[in-house]
Every structure is written in C-alpha cells, then in structure tokens.
Image (cartoon, rainbow, N blue to C red; front, side, top):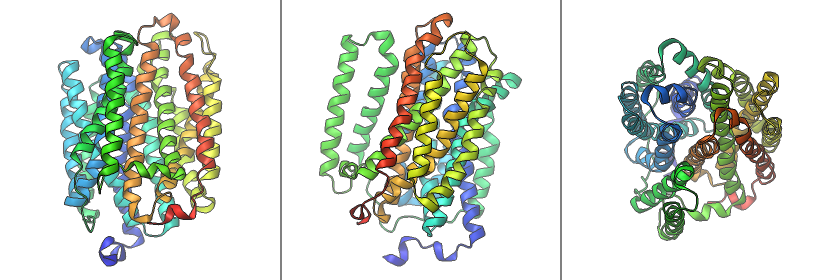
Length: 466
C-alpha cells in the first residue's frame, strides 16, 4: 500500500514537478479569475440584459455556490477515475459553459451557464491541489509550491476586476467569457503532455446523501441572504428559508457522523488547528468579495467611474496579493504559519477600518491605500491557511483538508457577494457610500478573526496522527 500511494513521485524530476505546478496554476488562474472578473462588469451586464441587483448577485453566486457545493465530490471522482482525466473533463465543461455565457441572450441563460461553469471549476480546484501535493513529497518544497499556487490564485482573484474592466472597455461585457477559450486550450494541451495520471490507492465511495444536504445548506443560506432585502427578513418565505437551512444543517451533521466514509466528517472540526483554518478561509474570502463588490458599485454608481477605471482602482490590491503570496509561502516553509497569518490579519483589519467612514467624496488616495492593505493581507493569508489545514490532519487526509478548505473559500465568496449586495441592493447612488459602511466593518472583523487562526495554527502532536 505504501508503494502505491504516490506512484509517480519517484519518477518526477525537479523540473517536471515544477512544470506540473505551472500547469495546475494555469487552471487555478481560470477558477480564481472567474470568481471576480464578472464583478466589475455587473453594471454593464445589468444594462445589457435589463436586470437589477439581485439578478446580478445570482450571476456571480450561481458560479460560486455550485463550485462550493461540488468541490469535495469532484475530488472523490478524481480519486476514483484519475486526477488528470477529471481535471481535463473539468476544463472542457468550464470552456463550454464559458462560451454559453458569452452568447447568453437573457439573464436566466447566463445564470444557468454560470452554474455549469461552477461544475467545471469544481473539477479543477481540488484536483489541481491534489496533483501538486502528490508531486511535491518534501514538506518544505510543498510549502513553497503552495505559496506559488496561492500567489497565482490570489493574483487571479485580485486581477479579475482589472482584467474585466479592460475587456469591457474594449470589447463589451461578453468578452470576459470569451477570454477563457485560449487559456482552456493551452491548459488541455499542457496537461496532456506534462501532468501524470494518478488516482487514490482506494477510491472513496460517493456520498450522495451528504452531497445533497450540503447543496441545500449552502444554496438556501446564501439564497436567503440574496433575496432577503426583496422578500423581507421576517417574511414567511424568509422564515421558511431559515428553518430549512437549520434542518438541513442538523441532518447533514447527523448523516455525516454516521457514515463510514462521509463527504465531510464533522469530527474533523474538533481539531482546533483544522477548524480554525477552515473558518479563516471563509473569513478571508468574505472580506475579499465584500471589498470587490462594494468597490464596483461605489465607484461606478456613486462616483461615476467607467468599468475600466473601477477595475484599475483594484491594481494595488492585485499587486499586494501577487508580491506577498510567494513571500508568505517562504515564511510558512521556514517559520510556520503563525507570522504570515498575523500579518494577514493586521493588514486586512487596517484596510477595512480605513473605509468605515466612506462617503461620496472620500479621497482616492485613501481608497487605493485601503485596497493595497487588503491585497497585502489577502496575499499573506492563503498559503498559511492551506498549510495549516493540511498540517492539522494526518498526511493521508491531505486531500480532504484541501478540498474542505477550497469549499470554505468559495462559500466565503458566495457569502461576501450576498452580504455586500444586500447592503446596497435598494440604495440610491447618493446613499450607497453610507449604506456600505457596515460592509467595511465586516471586512475589518474578518481580518481580526485571523489573529485567532494564527493563535491556533500550531498543531498538537495528536493532530498529526492517523
């Protein structure tokens, strides 16, 4: 069994290992880019398809909700049928759905195509991380690789608004989906040439009851947040949503606790290191997506900026994330996750606090400084959170840790979009800045929560035992 767990590792040279990482990073760039590239184009999409804020929220969250709900099952499919095979299937599904988004005649078709994009993306994110982890047997090299992986993912998330703004200015909003085609083709060719086929020595069975319940929990929870401003937070429909989410959550915990090989074992969250890392992943991506959506609506609606100008305003965020993510990976490899997590918490907290007094005439310099601070914090956060989650479980469960952490990130993205959209959904351009202030308080609170993750980031000896 020991010799079959990672059969490709002995034959991979250093150059081949880092080439595999590069191919996986290319796919992860797509996944991250499509999480945020649409944000800056939301006003243009709304104008082109005659849709309001709630429909625009669903345009973003249809992707992240499906992605969050299917990540773990897609990882299990990759273990069973081969990681490269599922990885390539994900690329095909993602590319086909991107084309459907690009030619969507209505918002309903666009939302449906975005959901299919999420299905394809779910086959890329956990599988790419599993491929990287299996290709890098040395813990220090793996930490550095995760730093690079986090850097590319962070760059794609932060650069999405810039890229989207430029594309919309030159070619219209549909171009943010057309751009995926050449990247998909390149990734398919490179994965066929360089990525070795691998699978788990014993494939985990699919947990269909757990998958169904997890989908209900995530979908209903975020759906109520999006539709709450329209239907009323105390309306019968909202109360029914709260009840359904609570019942589904309780059923999920009960079902998963009794299955021999659950989709997501609730007992894993009894380990403080692992549980805190997952909550940290949610917090970081709530902060990022609240920032991006509030930036989009504030700059374009309140300040009258173009999509290109609004996207360019996030360049400091992209620069901060890009520079600090690989540095974070090196710090994790040398010193452990506590220092980069502390730095991440400090920068995100200060960045959020800079904008709690946002108004119609807030200095552009203050805006850019806040975005830079949040980007630096985001760059420092990803590698230590992933490393902490992986190190918080036995090595044989590294894939599970990565999949759950990826799910937490996408859940955080969906929650951030829903919360930020709810704050400004029924607000006039003149009142949007004031209405968004609770969002910046939330960003600061998310940063503060990373101090707790940093404190819990040193695993106990028992956490590493199988």
